[in-house]
Image (cartoon, rainbow, N blue to C red; front, side, top):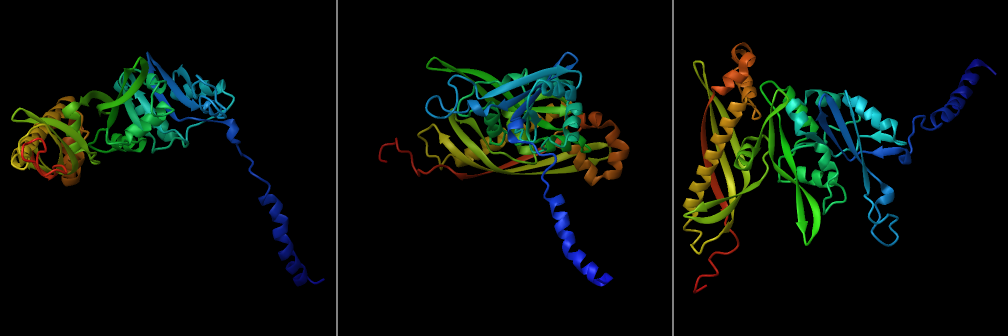
Length: 389
């Protein structure tokens, strides 16, 4: 057989020789029964230690109270494992050392920071999360009042796990959706601080049955990665008007002593810097679309429309000025006014303002204008309780 014939035969044989090598299986495979899926985790501070807690579902306990579900009545369908250590990785490693399954964070839905660690600083925890490839940057993040571990073990209704309830809550209109990626980005942007949804655990009792309620009550605002204040009520609503991602909200006010509620469903906010010498000013224009949800009066709602608009506009302006004053006082630029200056005046920003932004920001002036367009006042054109209707 000449050389050309030999090469021709080898060309056909060679793929068959390689097939066994390619199809030999996964050398690093991991069975699902060997994995502990983490649905939520929390980070608390205990003196100088980090306390890490993880919520792991127990498939064997997820059946119904009766029937062939395979579960055990009265047994929780999850377990919470917790450890404290000098570093986050050391605490996770201590938890792993006593578990028969491999901890898997890629399915984590919620990450909670206790208020102690939020005030102490979140830079180190966020750096740890960014460095670990199994951590999903789309995970929702929140700061909790008190210990974050307490919310993991909350006995909630509606959902099987507190993690699922918090995930639904953090992506609803009850707050502004905030992920690990959002916080890491805002903490590293020039002239920008991060704000984080704030959760609280309340005790509830209905017909003698006790349960836990997890509620979103506002936003934790930061300066250099540390919580400096919590915005609640009208302050939290005003922050929504300034945030890059608007989330609908409802508010209740009075008109001539009679209550009404409205919903702000869309907002366009424009922020323009105005420089007069060394004085920095910002003009903030807010145009909102709102619906009247309820009007507890027998008055004609159409005749009251101009009053509704003026009252809502006045309240918006008042709330915005108040929250801006808080941000200046606390040195928390969660809106990104420094970033706006950096885009418009990059040379002056890097030379004059960035090195002392906290001091400069405290002296900044704001001019706020608000305009509200009311689109929906309900399905009825008249008041049904009035005679003649």
